[in-house]
Length: 108
Length: 116
Image (cartoon, rainbow over all chains, first blue to last red; front, side, top):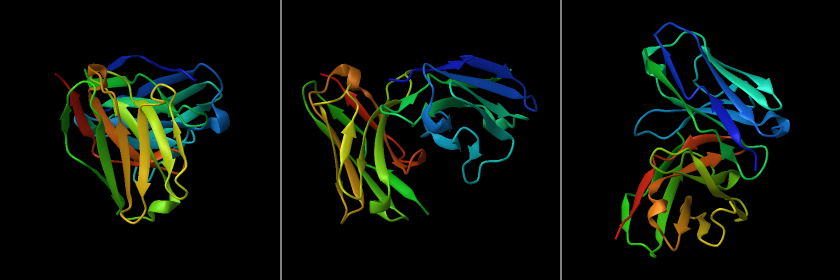
């Protein structure tokens, strides 16, 4: 099973600042099948990025992803008020599909 | 538009079973898989298994093997997840999600509470 470790656990930033979230895999993610999801309290996760760097439909371009193999990054270029949430990475290249423990982006 | 609508919250006693439904619309049910993911309070998302809605093939996480059954009804465009031998640690929000690879649409979640 691929274990995903996200860092930091919490990121305290102000609107307009840049957020950089990390996701490290215990072994290489097949075909870079790595997705990022955003989750707000009481809501289901929402797909942001897939294939490490492809934005899902309707996702603004301030969200970008990079990385390959075992190290992946989600960057939010300028935080908007609606971006404060928990972010999860997920690998879907091998079974079982696994998720990271999440990074909470909170308002400083 | 694509929608996945899940059944309502459930309260179950330890040892019982629960069956959660996921009614889909806005796309061809048999062209995608449906995965089930749960989230216990304060915990990360945990993948449980999936069904190929086209042919009915299933695969389950070993953590739930023997306790979880995922089925599909193509005539109703609905998937189901049944979890048996419930324990208190199964208290969680259960989600269904549509997938061709990544999970692009999710249901709203169903809270299952296991309590004596």
